[in-house]
Image (cartoon, rainbow, N blue to C red; front, side, top):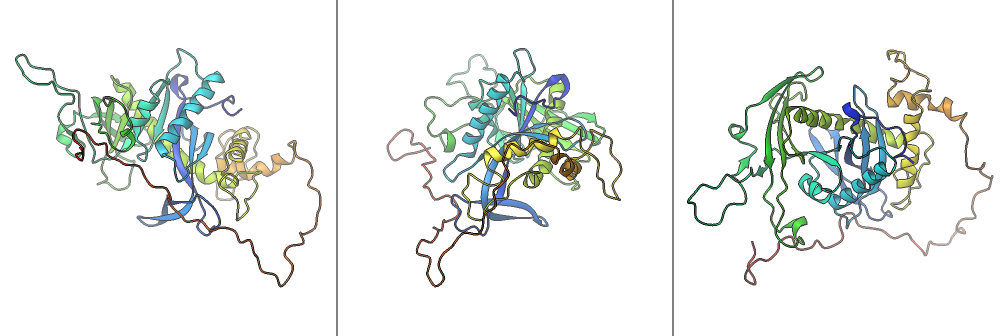
Length: 395
């Protein structure tokens, strides 16, 4: 049903999806199972904390222009035994297939753009989802080392031809091509440097441990972005992006980093989901599948403010400037949703009154205490290195 709604599109009718992980913090819920240590930022200056909670992976449609609206399409909880990249790949495949079934993408339309942050293995996602009509744009660490295409073989050279080119270090700016400068309205001057057919050198480790045969060559476009007004820290390193599209034009490069900057709209969407109108509050001892971040309740409740944008009244604060109809922020629409909700049909019946339960008789002890669960991954990780060659020797 969500895939069939009217979705925002960029220039040319292109859909732009974003993936991110947000935790539901459960620091004191000792009886809640499958909690993991979630990294939380913003609670102290230049510091992060690890707080027990349930991480959830979200897929949302981004909207162009000066807005903070997004359209959440799917939410999946990450468990202790789940591989985040594998779960995200299956989640994206399901979302894209539902969009195609709903007629949001047809043959001949521009590919769907998927943007992600540095917490994802973008090259692996590009390989697993290579049969879908999409272009992946993800941020990579600024200290990585990748490989350009192999150089042409010179006549008279003996030996096995190389599979990769020389090392391409991100921390050596002199190895990058000449930058292209673009004047933007909101970010000032943007300098972009792009390298085509840049790929990582894969080994039989970690997620590629069970790969049969020769490891693939996953080529893409590497971008180095330095924006004048993107960060307050003038000495901050440039942002490194990798796209699954090869042979990108200068227009494609500008489209990639501009779509990536729209990904920060999720920072407004994810905190807003906890205060969606019409949502039930969870019990303190609920299971991972229920509560405000349960899959079905979240996907039904979150589109309510987005659908109420054209009819919501601007209940602004005295210090806020008036906003035109259709240009209200998510917080303002949520503020006026209480006047709309009174005129909506309710499919549920009126709750029947009842008294309090009998409870445990006084003076008796609780013989069936709720189980306590540890926090973190409780399963043993598989081997991360494949033995090659002689027994007892590995690479």
